[in-house]
Image (cartoon, rainbow, N blue to C red):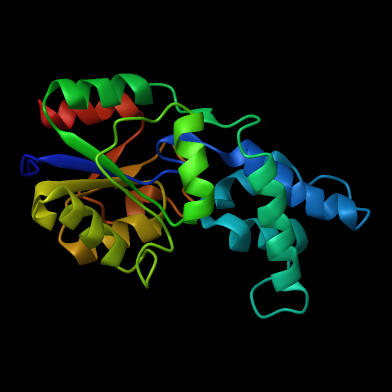
Length: 218
């Protein structure tokens, strides 16, 4: 079934708009180096990049929330990442053109990410994301995704009903949050996607490249 025409497109950040995994993986391998361990393969770390510190520390060191030293490692990871988060990060191919096309069509766009505000605010302009209608971070509302609160906040900031917004993300939590918020959802298969197939997420659409989004707007 065709999706209802949107008035705005909301995007996840890491793994959807921006390929930030190289710098996130480097912060995880910094922790391994501190323990005298060799770097973990990038192919092991990339799929969990959308899960942030929790996913990367788990993949790199098999240490998880609630384990001894997890919180210490989380803070070290975040400090290292904050100091080096624009070394290799860049927009995915097609994203600048996609955003230009959305603006040309009079559609608003925004960012809804679980990344903390202190990391998101400097990263967004540094990698060339400008003119966004709103930015909602993981600590903007009391609950991060998969709770719908961040998406509802974004719609409110744009002055739109949730159903007038599409949400595009590369993680199952993105699709769960969008569905709970009453938004059409689009799985970004060009992103990190965790360890599950995005075709199984029950998104309203599955796309393999950013510019494919334009075909849904035709």
